[in-house]
Image: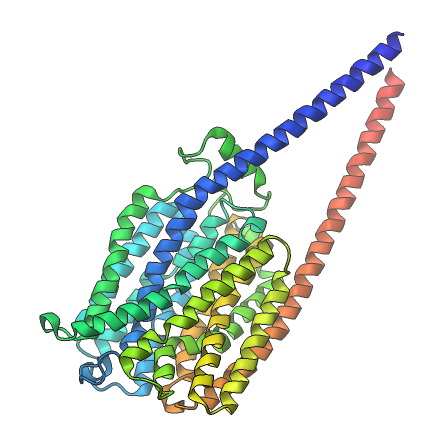
Length: 491
């Protein structure tokens, strides 16, 4: 009887423990959802709004290329009758500091805390952006564009790095899609603003393009002050979350996720990053898609204008539909990937194939309306690719230093799109742009090969990791059995 009672008590205790564990898990799940809702409002929505502001002023240089041309006060004329090669350099020089300083600038977010570093980025980019409106010659606009790129370096990869302190990689797909889609929606607003500001030509004795830089740079300065006081830094330090919500967020993060308490620079993690074969393949994906897919976006208003369908003012408005389409595509793909209805690698391959088809058709068709439709689809597809693949790039990077440098390097490599893209899409190749489209097709085919290679390498790495975990679990079970046997002998 005594043995039966002990067995019954043990059974009741086990059931009680199981119930406590189940209750704890349910409570943790509720706390995590509640914490993520709070965090989405404080962190994700704010970053999305700031990214919208940033993209407006990044794309405004393309809009200024054709603003008020008919009135004779265009930017190229007022800065010294710039030719196509000089204008390509005006566009390209912005991306050189991005290319060289972005990895370090991303890691500095951890060194100085996110609120301080992001405040610095926004303040300096807003001031320098407005200074572009005061330039008088080719050298002046080149200098402003270079320092503007230096000021901004680290914002976009810094956002992704910061999100990885708060969200597990499997929670990032829809969030990154929303963040990026918000920024791309700026193409719609930027075209509309450029159209409206073009009517300010001559106001205060300033040309319309100067007002574009001044008015679109001011919001970034205002955002910097809000960011300093408002932006959450790390889960461990924020007071707007309850202790249970903080614990739920930290428990949901993988062990290799970036951490507030980890060293900013870890040599061992850096070594591990550089021996990982996926580093090269991810970099090549970003380079090939950046140049081949994004190239057209840097000169989109000019390409649309040279289709001969409308004047410069209406061409600004016609840049709006491609960016509206980006928002729809990204949110749809992000939702399908987030709910595990679509594999992100398959989505990426589909986007690349769609662009290749559009560029081939652009080289063959002659109807202006058809060309505009294909330009719109190609532009929307190109802008939708990176956000779809980013969660996997973040997941593969293990550790605080690894994540910061990997995200920074990957995004820096993509900046070659801003250096090479405008050179490929110079106006001297228009209005047909067959040479430009042909280059894009070749680069995107190379990107498809790199996507397949990276998919395989990541799959093989995950398989090895699972086998290692099973072996460790099996070893632990053997140790437990041996301990239980020894306890039995002692009893």
